[in-house]
Image (tube, rainbow, N blue to C red; front, side):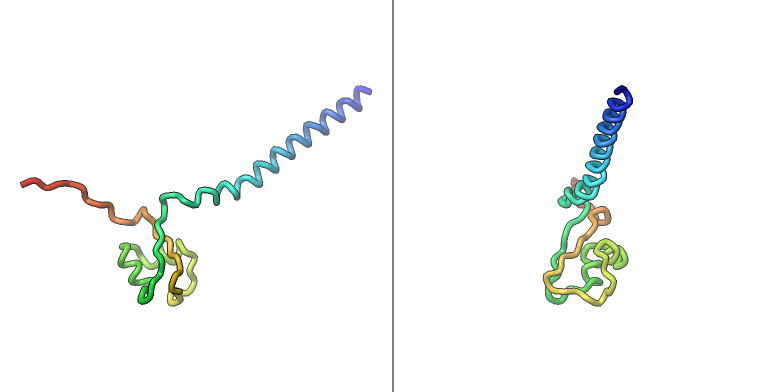
Length: 101
């Protein structure tokens, strides 16, 4: 009788552990995509005449960074309306210093 109770208790504990582990494992991918509105990137919507080179100059970023952030394989292919992520870490900060003469 004691062995049967121990077996049931161990089985119940195993089910609880497996359930918690599965909840943890499946919550990781959802959590990482849940905060898509972070402040690390801004977006640039491609308009007629835009090139990756002109976008990189507009935001003072290297072409390689834009290609990497956006997983772009062919640097010559842009579509009007395409959304390009721009890292805010590399954007110049505004100069709020007042110069008083």
